[in-house]
Image 1 (cartoon, rainbow, N blue to C red):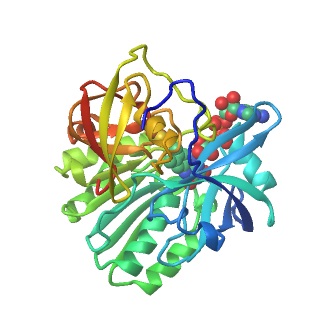
Image 2: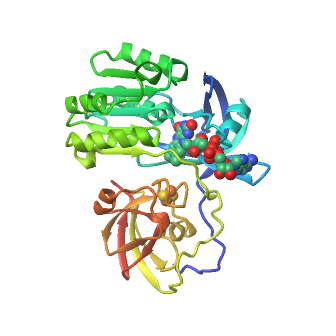
Length: 356
Ligand SMILES: Cc1cc2nc3c(=O)[nH]c(=O)nc-3n(C[C@H](O)[C@H](O)[C@H](O)COP(=O)(O)OP(=O)(O)OC[C@H]3O[C@@H](n4cnc5c(N)ncnc54)[C@H](O)[C@@H]3O)c2cc1C
Ligand code: FES
């Protein structure tokens, strides 16, 4: 199929309207919002523990903004209900809008779940490091690993003070249910100061072979990341989720972006959702846009190189990424590429979205 550069994009949008079915005040500055997923779109909204959704938030100023929120629910526990935990960001827009305005019955436009902060195998030992609202994807993974997996699970959970702890009672309940397999270190800055490298390293040393997951403020993640290096943890076992606001509009799939002036065409062989497809790839157009414009259900969220929802693995050929604000050098060396930023450097390229 040939891609016409100026033709309107007939993308299979991954956005759907969901209804808010519950809003719970989690702490004084955070809420849990639950969405019902109707039967007819259950398949589109299947998710892996640790993934996130992207919400369209109305705005008088810019019509709308898009923000990502990790799912705190687990597909193994919470059936067809999606739960997100939103914490107010000081002077922020969307988080405060959600905390102030989300009500039962409200309809919201939500992009289907995506993200790479997931576990390949729930049966292995896992060590989690969460700071503040970074607990949301971690809670989903912890619940899933305990319910559906067989390994040991340890959680280091740092918060400013007791009042700011999200999901405290749910975690206590989990500790009671899984005394043999779950342990938690709750770190309150009000009592112990900011988390120390020593406290983090102690856990890492006791769980050397475990898969490591971290999510929280940047300084917290940097501390944990440094500790993993010092403790000799294999990089491929370390997973980070970075919370940041999107600046672009991932809901606009009507515009086919041109990221370079090269008008040539390459060929892409793409493994996606169990299929192997071949597409003509205009050299100035990101691979994601090419796939969406031809009706393929490729994963994405930000479409600006910031979230890694669109990660694929380079199997053959070469790709240039116009922007990359999320993959670290080791990821790129491992062959990971952002499809939303990918332009071909060779005439033929093979990538896989499956089995990353
Ligand atoms: C993968 C991922 C998962 C995440 N998961 C979570 C989570 O589980 N829980 C959580 O709390 N957060 C999560 N986040 C962070 C979340 O997406 C937001 O970054 C966070 O809520 C802060 O957004 P904010 O709009 O409140 O703040 P900011 O982005 O800081 O708000 C300020 C921005 O909004 C603009 N703005 C101000 N007023 C308006 C207006 N009236 N109209 C339009 N724009 C305006 C400003 O120009 C400025 O750019 C996640 C982020 C990512 C990438
Ligand atoms: S869709 Fe977010 S990095 Fe590509």
